[in-house]
Figure 1 (cartoon, helix red, strand yellow):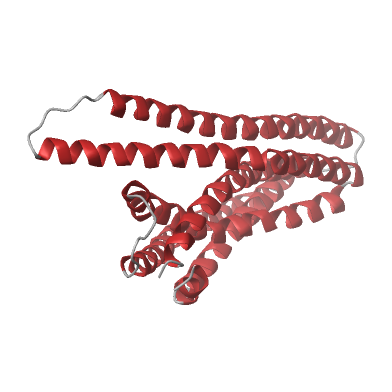
Figure 2: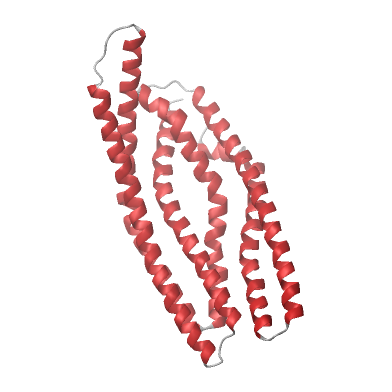
Amino acid sequence: MNIVTILKKTKYALFKKIVTSVMMQGLLLIIPVYWARTINHVTDKDYNVAFKLVIVTLILSLLYYLWSYLNQKTWYNYYNKLYLECTDSIQKVNPKEISLGEYTNIMNNDIDIIGTFIGNGVTRIIQILEFIVIYIYFLKVDTIIFLITLSVSILMVIIIIYFGPKIELKNKARKDSLDDKTIIVHDIYNILKKKDKTNNDTLIKSTKEYLNNNAKFNLFVNAMIFLVLSFIELCRYGIIIYSIYLVSIGNMAIGTIVLIYSYYAKIITNFEVLGTIHAEYQSFKVSLNRLSKLIKKN
């Protein structure tokens, strides 16, 4: 059994996950629109309509939390099915030419990484598609806002892709050091089980190496993400200043600034997700290679 076969066997759970993710993320795009309209009606002193819009926004917000819960429920359902199918495929395989440490980590860690990445992938792909909706809105509002946002976004994607190979190398070093540590743990367990004394210097050394590689991997990923988010944050406030200017000359409604600010918050969130996806993909790729190597031995 390969990963494609496993995915086919979980397709119905995947469909449910897609539905709940679309509803949840769609509401996140719609709610700021109603807030913007509320601000515009308050500015125009049309308070009755503004009150009604607040009620509508409240209802939509409550629906968002409902769909968020359903999304979590379908996520665990999909994750559990993936996890069980991967585990079932491994337990039927004779682990030739593979260490006990690697086998243990594939069972305990790599399957979790694969299931988590694929399970989260549905929502995150939809979050990336939100960029299209936001960019189209910016194009309708003002060409300059659209061009600046698009240019900065492309530049940030290039930065994320550039750091990809370095992230993969650091993640592989982390995985390898965890395998070494696990082997030593098994050895110490066997010694202690025989009531023999053991020197823990080797375990401490391997643990320090793993912790060091783990810290390097996570700090490198966070540095990349924070660099990208800082650039986008600078762009957001530049756009807001420009939008205030447009309001001052009567070319933009105040509520539009609220919507632009909210949508830029979505862009920042989605770029954080994009950076996380890229880092997680490198981890997913390593774990998938390890799992596939074991399954192919069947």
